[in-house]
Image 1 (spheres, rainbow, N blue to C red):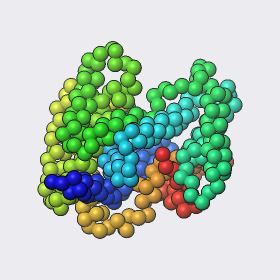
Image 2 (cartoon, one colour):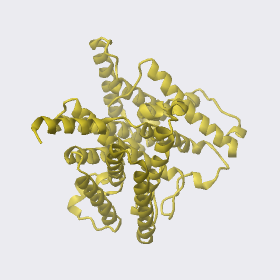
Image 3 (cartoon, helix red, strand yellow):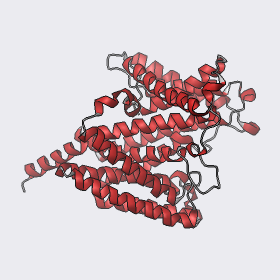
Length: 404
């Protein structure tokens, strides 16, 4: 094969790998809606236990315990498409690595500021916890908003500068419980996503679509999850962030990368039935691994056990397969367009509840108890999640859109 033919083949392959898949956006949107929903369950009473997080030390999971891993899985599914799209635009490996590092830092920064808000000493800091969250989220938007190209450069620089200065000021004045200063703590949800994204994205960049390397990486992190659960990790590895060192969170993300790459292969062959059969078999195998490893280390989100990794990977794979047939193959994407902002600007959608809780609490607004109880309360939380999606869509239309 001549050099031009090789180049054309590679370009064609990258183009196929870069095509957007509506099912990924819709699955991401559904997952974000579920995340807002389960995070709002604290406001309700008399609701089924299986909807909530299972307490630490208990063998089992609830609905709330499968949402975060599903999101990590979707982060992984998006990676091959994102990396290849940037390669098509001419990005080198070094440029891709820089992009990955900067995005990871952004997620870590957001996660750390929000997690510090959970343990803030309002009196010593002089800032109400909800105000802290609002100031942090406003700063995130100022720094990482995708400003329109028509915006004057000095306005963009000033806005970003205000955001950075605000975060620095918040970190300086912060006092936590027992007068502790600003710290990373457990990094927060966004921080854990940041570390998982960093590890999985770097593997994806250097694997260059080679499924053997991607699969080996997934196996490696899965084994690392088991080694960590067995408390056999060498002490000298303690310098590695626990989100990576534990193996489970990156294993979830790498699972998404592997599934996305396999999906692309079958899509190029237009062999969707065999793809579904392969994913079904893989899901059954993962459930089997979950059942087996549960006998050793239990099934727990808080402990990030291997059984949780395998079971949630299976659930996520099955959900993607079903949604792909419904949305992409069934042509039903327009029927779900009302939730799409949660899938295309997921980070902004995640931040909206921080503003909502601050607004209602600081203005002393309360719903009647009947709207916070049982089935009616659950409906309230569903509507609240959909309201956050609607607000995200409105903000997008006026130029507020986060892009890391």
